[in-house]
Image 1: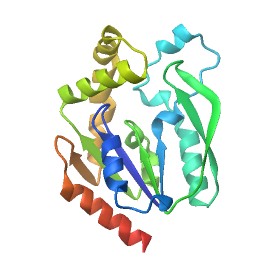
Image 2: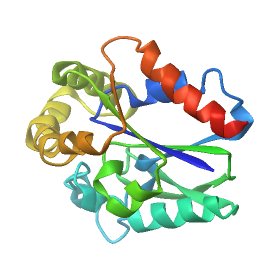
Image 3: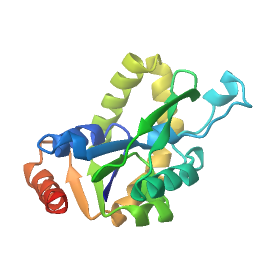
Length: 202
């Protein structure tokens, strides 16, 4: 199994890069795990308390479970991937049955901050985008998909997203094997990643 970690700031275009990589690969042989599914369950807190959680800090992520699940997949075992709701700021009771694949892509803003998780990645990718562009994408997504209003998104960006990006996410660029600037379609970088994957799939 080839495990690829794709990191980068919020709104950097990680999902776009994932789709570009998968575009010409056999879909039956590639699986995706999102860090967002592994936010910790906070059943002991009220909604208002959960809304105050700093979701851009590494301690918000259940890295132990994510590492455990990746190791299980490497051993050929199925996993029950958690489902997280950004509307209620908590895990739901649902899970997603995830089967091992020849290639597993793990994507998320904080995945390169955790040493044990980092060691499981065969290829580490960091997607870089201009901070203004990331903010615009975050605004559009949170308003359209997560029921936020503009003031709430901007307040969260200024109070947590930006400082957390500078403290935890941007420094992990140093761990990346490949840095993809996502201000345009970067065919060379994507082709390099695809070539490495195809070698493993033979």
